[in-house]
Length: 269
Image (cartoon, rainbow, N blue to C red; front, side):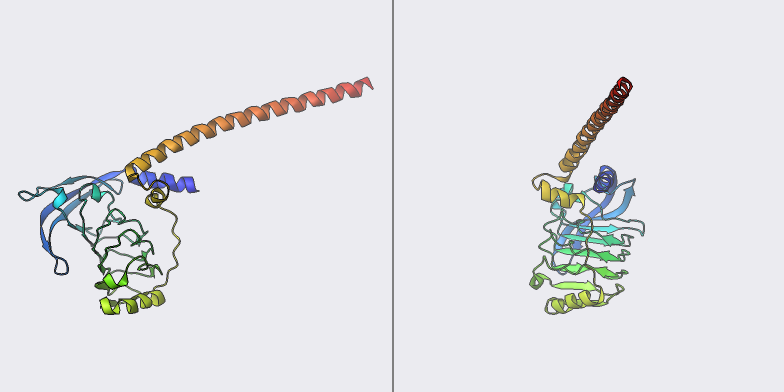
């Protein structure tokens, strides 16, 4: 069962798609004016991994200057794009809207350790894992308004210093409707645990397994190693099956010989 899960994860990551950007500036009151990519179209083929980004940068700007990204899901995007850090390594702000994501399993934003502002609005969210902020320690602004949340991980905010949370917005999300600032964050967290309880135990994702087994490798290297390991295991399994078949054949032959000896002994008597 675990092997099937890994194969499924590898299948997702091995596929790719293109993000088209309009580059410009976004004046974010809570943070600053940041150079951003605002998606004009996401060309989805059959996977979740971004391998190409198009668009014309403003004069003197490049990928390394991008600190914010807005993604319009156009009500058809059903996942959080993976691999954006390969193009935008300094992302501090992510806003995804008008999508159909459903569940956040927990590792969707692990590649953005400098993330400060996360907003998923009108994304059809129903479930959020407790693991979502485990690798984004700088989060200060969280917005999940206008979703259909039913289950929110009991320990969603446990990895964070709640004193650094300056604004948390869960307005019109289904199980609750509150938006608070720093002084009321703890009160909101208690409300979430009471009204949207979820003791989640999702199966481990590929990124989670990588971080445990090979923390120094990037996800592409880890996936390649996993594929090679699976090939080796399959070859080893095939060889063992052949050996087992041979042993079973030899045992059958021995049993036949024993039967023959018994018949001969009986005849001699």
